[in-house]
Image (tube, rainbow, N blue to C red):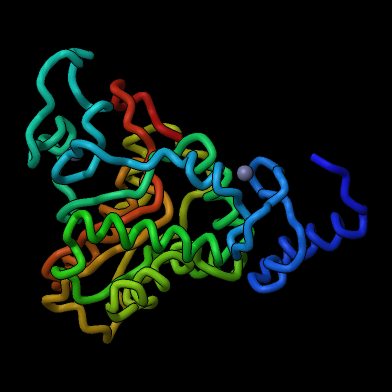
Length: 274
Ligand SMILES: [Zn+2]
Ligand SMILES: [Zn+2]
């Protein structure tokens, strides 16, 4: 890469830090993931190669949790026939969720991990809109949009939102609602129990920590609503489950979870995801 004047570099860094979509079109900047010079005018400060490298999900998925077939086929007998559509993975056969089904754009690995960090900690709104476009495609592919009345983000606890200044799920859910032409209800759901400070290692601890952590805001009308519930990452499904249970408990007719990323489920269930 040719050296550029340090002034440009400083200005570029300042602008990408400011997250200003318009000016980044006119000033050179580096891809925030691979540091290559961005040659295309876009509000998203990530190059085409990096965007194309996100491990998008496809193929046969569990009819309920949306986990790809490859990660839950038993015993590694990958020479066998693919399961038909509508098949339920072993985990979903032994557990019931608050949501009817959950789907994601991609696996939480590779370049998508630092990309999610940019959304989460740097409030990168153009990236939130880009992710919303991808979720719009997933919603179309899964034919969910016709069965939805409102779009709701998984909320942060009040204290966490105050510290961060925003909810990253909001940065995805709001443009997605606009794209799908559906009403957006940012404050329908509240997180009443903060996330524990300690790093949770065990799968069961994770489920315990979010049990009863959500409630619907008093006075909000939830009865008979069909909800599209949005989050950035689905790790075990425990958070989506708890949020969906609060909605169902308040009378929601159905809840479909949609996340940008999801952790690949390891065959050794119980060994603990992060
Ligand atoms: Zn890049
Ligand atoms: Zn499943």
